[in-house]
Amino acid sequence: MTGKLRNKWLKLYECAAHIGALDPWEIFGEADKFAYMWKAKEKTFYFSFIAESAGRFGIACYDGEVNYARARKRLNARNNKQEPTFMLQDAYICLWGNREDLSKPTYELIRELGFSFRGKGAWLYFQRYETGYEPVLPSERDLDLMTEAFGNLYMMVRAVREGSVDPQFDRGVTLTRWYDPEDKLYYTHPFQVPEPEAPRTEITFQPDPLFDDLLKTPRGHSVWELDWSYMPTLVKDGDRWVFPHIVLCVDQDSGLVLFHEMLDLKGNIVNAVADDLCTTMAELGRPASIALCDDDLKAIVEDLCRKTRVKLTFKKRLPALKAARDELLKMM
Image (cartoon, rainbow, N blue to C red; front, side, top):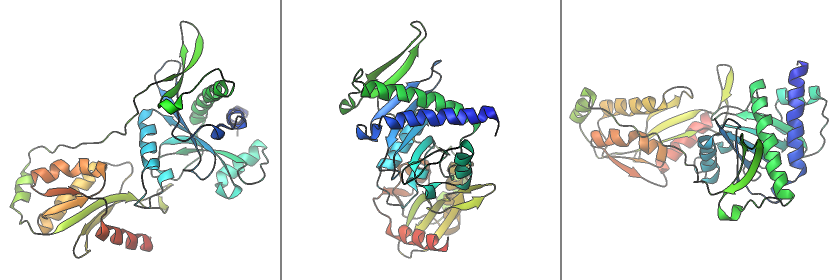
């Protein structure tokens, strides 16, 4: 490690330690929203003081409202699919954890920096989270972003602790910090900001000979259950460990798996799901209906089902699919 990189790590640790010393978890909940607008205002960071979702104290930093919204949606939802929900977010996260929580690279970094943490909840460490992947150590560029972001978060928390700012979180506001180039000053105030929403990818299929061919296939009386989920187990994919993202389709009556595929986390998952569904319809005929329970998946297949005249139903539970997914988990 170069001296320059070591100094960056030490500065980030110092920022986080200053925030932790203010004991923010005593007064803030995970739903309390903080935002910092970068000086040039080309990006905004959102923060959450996490505790229950991680099983330990921590700070999550999100680059942009989309990443924040997606993470909060997953962490607040009921985990009926037994997904590793905390791993399914794009964020910079620091945690006060235990020795056994640390990966080998993280432990070696702490030793190299000269820290000697002791006891449960005392091991401060940083990770870069990317949806579906095992967390990794932040890059040098990540350290620069995190230090800027965490330094300004500290100023917000200190302002609340000292009583100079009332965050008014009970009114659903966002405590926001920004830099005014005219005044050459930073300001921290609560604002009524619309709650960020996780975007949905709605797909429209253009008229194509494929649909004419599918309409010629017989339509039966079967109901197919369709869903996707991240499996709560790590597998090696190239040079990284991933949580497999599996799309699964099951016949409701027989429990027969019609198709399943591990989706490429960097690939076009929309095309992959549509291709699997079209191929299965071409081989087996169209079902009477397709049942699903996921909003994002519904947005992908809704137009396809409409054009192929297959009824689409939204259900809270998919028992046949759950049984098939449980069996798949056992094999993994």
